[in-house]
Figure (cartoon, rainbow, N blue to C red):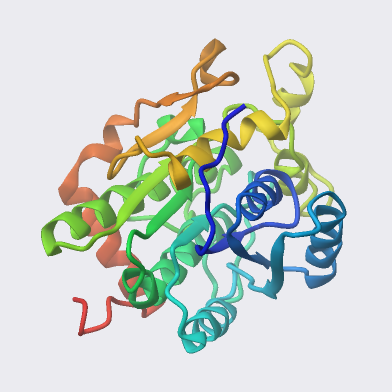
Length: 310
């Protein structure tokens, strides 16, 4: 079991912290001494998760705040609240996401749901929080990707899957985009001399509600991926949330994590096991394409680096 180093005095934000890897990350960061904001879409679920964590760790410093990554107005409101507080943000964990709804759905701003929730929302949140992140002495931004990123490609002519929607194709694109965000942010930090570590992780095949939550959207139909996962349940190696969160926690706190590093399970098929350095998809390694996607995200969201740090 990965032991999270002492986090006393550190301030962290974890998105999607009401369940799964987000909740486990919030629990273990708080148990190690961090003050953690549990950023969730449904406050009541967040409060229940907070109460359950406090029952095990009464000393934990946790608070619940609302954010909907599928609504850029909500992202702005949340980020403005963190920035206004004036406390440097040591750690941002972009964990929340949605997986493979069987029909094409859109965010509040009209983006395809997976591209909007998994990439554009975290992008906007990260950029809006960068001033307060860079005010911390040794900050990190950690973004959750997926092994499905290896099957992704960025279609700049159809980023919103308006011409052709496939649940798995859209999910893979969004998770590849998350890795490209991680690597471009790391490149920006190096080029501009920011003391910022941008890293990424994937959980392998961790048993959470991610697969079922996405599949339940869209009128009861199920995506092919959720059908396949159900058919192979018990055949594919899988792991519990405690083990599955460890790559994310290592990316967030590991002393050996490096800029642009990508971490995941090192066991069978990369689905289970202790954390190792993961091999990123070749398409995430093209600096020019990463920069192009970043610029497109700025255009789509209307969120760009503040002038005083750009």
